[in-house]
Length: 367
Image 1: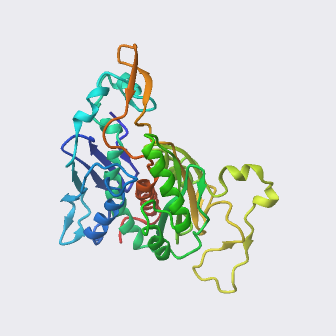
Image 2: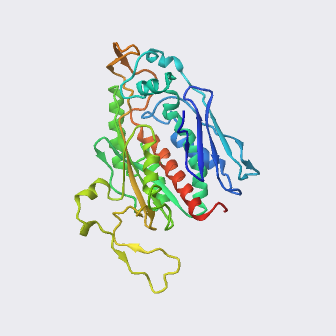
Image 3: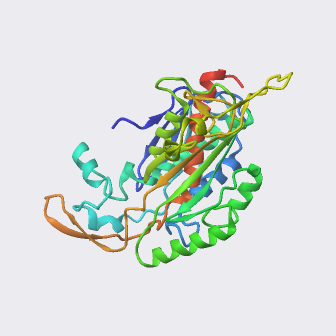
């Protein structure tokens, strides 16, 4: 199976299955002498781990990360980092009923057809459990970006048809505090209450609901990304679309920009002060989303990620078995009624991996 690695200079390879002994990640290309804050890394994993609240899966995983290589006396050595996260609460018997049945909108049929076998226990490599390894790697990437002053903030901006007001103009520290004050990770308290009620009601019906995660990147220097195949927004798009259940990505004005005229959409550049120094030029608007010609322009980078409803529902559904015969299946076990509260950490992690990779490509590998 190919496709387990991501990035060029800051490159990660994840391994492990949902119901195996452990999952993990190898990070190659991380510069030496980066201070490794294990408490920060664990806190990032805690935002993604299952069993957080009544609106997430009740699988109980501590997601305690173990460092197997690449760190000495609290700093990276420049050699590959290996991070391991043991699986602690598998209930493989919950999946016995789908051993010979294809679940609607899962990877069961496509995986079986491509590889000739599949791990039906939670989906194996196709399970969202794999994203814990990405969050661990993304936390290392965040520590690297912090040395350059780059900040990343994601939050739940929609659940179903409930949309949150735009609060991204506030300082990141304030936004993080507001976001973490509720279980749905929406920084607007009133909207968060509506979202929680909706998710909980849908959960009780045995159904699921989708949503959106919005992300802003601040203090990104001018010049990250390349103008052809390695456009910064193209790599961000690939990163986000590689996350389980993601069905859409838009940056800047996104699809709404297609309804505008050029005279409305162009971001007018503001003349520089008489002594601009190293300050990047600014624009009056930011429909470009901080990226022009595939290259960061110094403005805030912002994008939105759309997540479909979780495919496992606690209702009877028509399907077929591996023999192609009509069958019926119903979800069992522990599953999220809405993935977006836990997906916030994954979106931030994947954004951090893209930015760290492009930062090293542009600035070199020494801290």
